[in-house]
Amino acid sequence: MAEITASMVKELREASGAGMMDCKTALNENDGNMEAAIDWLRTKGLAKAAKKAGRVAADGLVGVVSGGTSGAVVEVNSETDFVARNETFQGMVTDISAIALNTGGDHDALLAADYPGVDKSVEAHVQEMVGTIGENMTVRRSKTLSVSDGVVASYMHSQVADGLGKIGVLVALQSTGDKEKLDALGRQLAMHVAATNPLAVNVDSLNPDDIERERAVLIAEAKESGKPDEIIEKMVEGRLRKFYEEVVLTSQVFVIDGETRISKVLENAAGDVGAPVELTGFARFELGEGVDKGEEADFAAEVAAAVSNA
Image 1 (tube, rainbow, N blue to C red):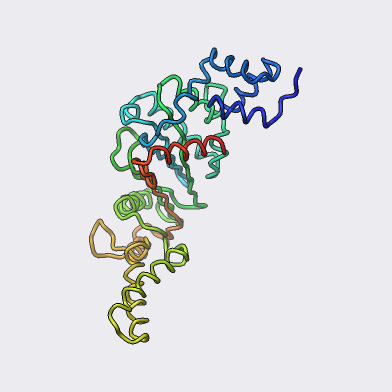
Image 2 (image 1 turned 90 degrees about the vertical axis):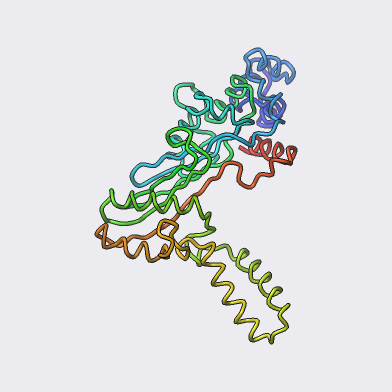
């Protein structure tokens, strides 16, 4: 019996598009012969995904699930919206969202987790479904949020089924207050996040690179005025504050009433729920976000990389 190495499994996986364990089994069944292993996978219907792996998977669904102190959001891509309306695909995204709750935000752990009822990993099951449904699919990203006390609330925009749609949001509220009222507040805040797409919860959590990039642009613009450097510095600081009001969640104006800053909304909520409320985090997944759908080859490469690095 030939020794089956990790590099052999990787090579077969890349050649066939089949799951890691299926590739290992195929090599064991065929004494390490690569071509025979590919044929074995084809006879089992497990290599069909390979023919589709180069096609763009830029549609699909975002799934969210939340319950009590934790929540998860995932993006599962397909090639067309037609498949996204398929009940089998929708059920798979719902299952993957639920599984993500137990993987602590580790995307690799999600892909490796057991998919219920099929004796396969999430990754292997998705690849199997590629052959069944007939389109390339990938679990593109996932994230979880949790609090020690309070709620993780969710909102789905453009919902096509329960917890499934185009923009999924989670908001984590830490508080010992009334959980029902916290959940209602969290849902409103999640709706706000869906609409405004903030970059960070507060100024301190903004990426320093984003701040410096914005500062550089503002300085260049201000210098066009021909004013002295000390005036330019004040102009830039004033415009940076405006930038924070646009991209920092707690500095934004609440879209629900159009006048109150989110920081004040949280402060006012303390009296209603019976305890201080801290917004500790949020997650916003928009379907296809960051993907140039016109650059098919680039996204195909991204999908391939996501699969090969899992």
